View 1 (spheres, rainbow, N blue to C red):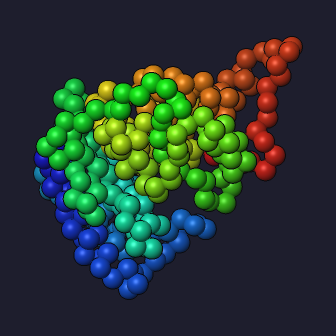
View 2 (cartoon, helix red, strand yellow):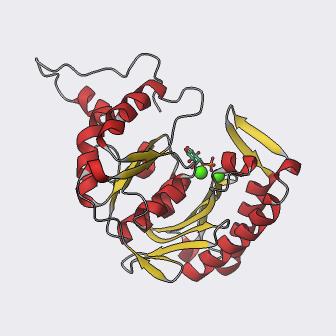
View 3 (cartoon, protein in one colour):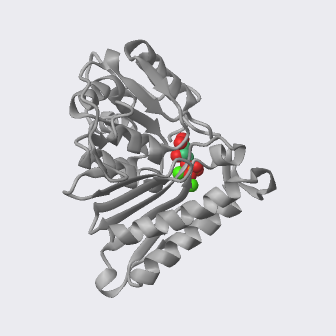
Length: 288
Ligand code: IPD
Ligand code: CA
Ligand code: CA
């Protein structure tokens, strides 16, 4: 199944590379302000789905541009989670940081992952229990243990209604404590870079399952942890994602858990403590 996913990712990558030679000619649509889609996103997604369903016609699909379809028969528990082009805003501008992301979930568990960067021909792969690879080299998360030595990646909010105020507070806490923070613009690749040890950690709000499914398996198979800001593993549903090696992940939880939507939720459920009343989200923030 991993081989089929690699074939699908390379087919999409070839389409993306061809289109990147003339980005001026692209037809660009807008899903909402600052959220773009091009004919290349659609063509790449169609090529991926063709390849996957060609091999496994009964499997389910959960794809960013064309939505969900259930698996049937023996393929019922199998769902391919697809982001055909992660980093579309970069792609439209010719900023060469974007990738194809494909994950296979079986009965709710991530089992296979491919993140393919067609600009560098970097192929990141992982299978559950078998480690993570960049091309044919085994990769592992970085070993740094002090946050002050760490290079982190993140994603800035960019859509109307995103939690700008909360995010700026989180970033304000992070910047003085780390060696550097980068905003490359492709969440799937950000997670792949954590898996490869190129970045020590990652945090972002507002991500969708197709942004993070494949990258998350890469991180865990490379020895890291992925979860929401309170350290729980339900990052696919909660739209908050954080990753790092176990030591760094723990320190990130210490800093970011108070900004978690999950923590706010818990606050509302728990009886208010007399000395520490629950903090409402900052003014101007919408729930993300
Ligand atoms: C986006 C990228 C970006 C992240 C956004 C995503 P797209 O995906 O992953 O890094 O900050 O939240 O939507 O739209 O280019 O597939
Ligand atoms: Ca994406
Ligand atoms: Ca996309």
